[in-house]
Length: 145
Image (cartoon, rainbow, N blue to C red; front, top):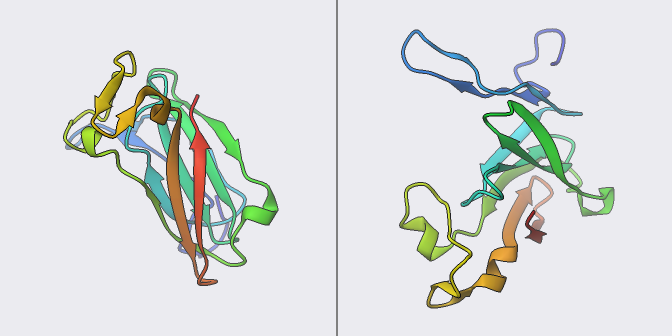
């Protein structure tokens, strides 16, 4: 976490609970600069949540977490040539139309198809779009676990 009076944190925390009973759900995710954008993937990967994180420095990260384990793990380490030249302003995963209609976001990859246009092979990657202060829009195909 950043020392001093800055308003942005160099990390993420996740909490669970309701009302007065809030507690930390995961260990904090430490980052190299202030977090400016986050987006959870539309489905889980091997029972893990996937989170894309964009930083003020232009860096991008993708981490996974399993609530029962309580910690973050790095899934994708982007090389600096893929970074934005300045702060990441927005991240968005491409939703799967079949999964968008399901509350839990899970998908049964055991069936041959889970929607008319999605085969089992299409479940092997997700698309992530990022945009930054540098006016660049970047598209990434992320291979799943």
